[in-house]
Image 1: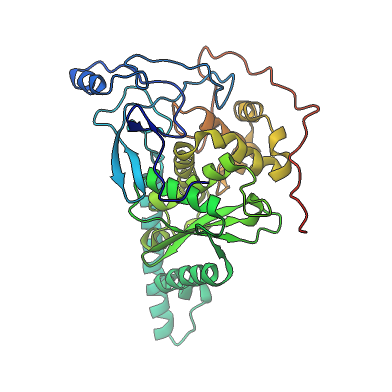
Image 2: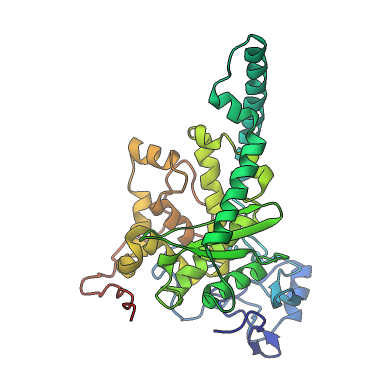
Length: 391
């Protein structure tokens, strides 16, 4: 375990990303891109695409391999960190952004505008209804009162949630859950955040979950204890890095803002529209998790699908391929009413980095892609062992 202030390893006189995207740079065609590529021409950054024979994160996938471009390095608040290149490469990198950073889902902002307008309209109608009822000598019902005082309700609930973390959660630090703390620091640095959010470990009681929130100018992430082994080591380090990148991504994308959460106050009560907005935010956070530690995506999804002991038996490609074949009205409505993308669609989106995750219609295989399968069998595989007993 390296201390938080340690710098990335050096190679050929420059820092090296310890978790680089697989593949090389696509050769740019314009003059500006050529000059930028020439500045970084080296064995580490070839001017033509190269595809190493190292294991792919999703073996056998018919989808495009993610690519990076030659990034510069700068001294940030957490040491030397990569910064986006001056000229974007032609191909999509691992975060769906031409600069190698995570991209926002294209449906997120349009849906956010619609939900915020509905929330503002609902609050105005509730205020007018309360005034009319009070003038008539009647008592407004509880729902109208909650809508009128939504700004105070949101502020109060955020404050209570943060206070609960401060007095009940185990705060990650260089001495408490140092592995998780380092992952939070690295994710904040990768996303260019000016301040590392607080991070807490909370009792999971067998549940696998994590979330992000904030209060005032403070932001924090909470990770359930079942993602760690006894002794504080991460049970699945790569999967945990993806999950932490996902949660820190919520903060980096502004999902934990007070004003956003106030604008989304009625989202849970809006069928289809509200849940679709929340799903688009989850896809955005998944882009952050993938950008932070792409090799942890299969392990993270396997953990969500089968738990912390059987996650290694989950065939990522086999489950992702079902997104294109599982169809019907109830499949559609199950996804449409869910606050998170259904797992098969989510795995498909994490594997196919050439497009954003589907919100409403199931994904389809690219034209000319080979048929799905065959898949490696998990027969005879040994699940992850349970943690050691407390002496």
